[in-house]
Image 1 (cartoon, rainbow, N blue to C red):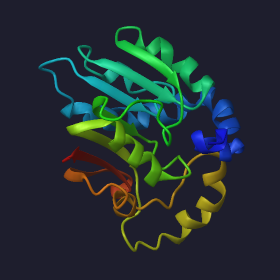
Image 2 (image 1 turned 90 degrees about the vertical axis):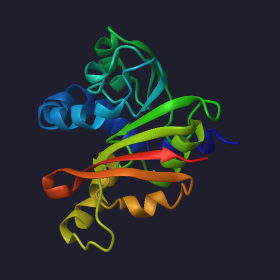
Image 3 (image 1 turned 90 degrees about the horizontal axis):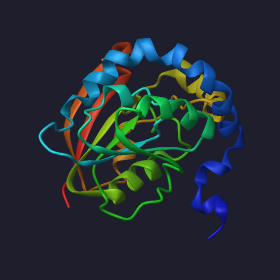
Length: 211
């Protein structure tokens, strides 16, 4: 297997470069508008006993200060600059930082109790592969918490699709339909699906692995 097959994000070097350049500015753009939505999205993580939790696509670590401190976390991202910004935010957590690909996770199957996918499915070139990998490393009965922007099935959204031709190369995709991504993971059950921001463009979705 080639390195590109093992780490699919390498197929888009512009995306890797752009996030290295964006890292110092990312918090100023994203943190305040998204903070309450992130906190709300993470509210269903258990607080009764320690679990093993993967933050796949941790970015600059904006989720980390919002997480319950009792769990054991693994924070993965494909970009060293992003991870460098995330590390200080994990100082009060039991967290290990991993350079890796959300579309080819370097973990054994059924390793985690919960997986958090915040603003990552609409960034990766292959969202179906990203979700499939999250399912693979999740224990049966475990949950996946999604927070991202998704088009509705058959939604035309011509401006978003037009800008997507450009933005998908260096920042994020605007054409991802969650219902299409979900077909890659038939073992998942939708527990909840809430509109969050931008008139429902951003959604908070909780999924459970049934087998």
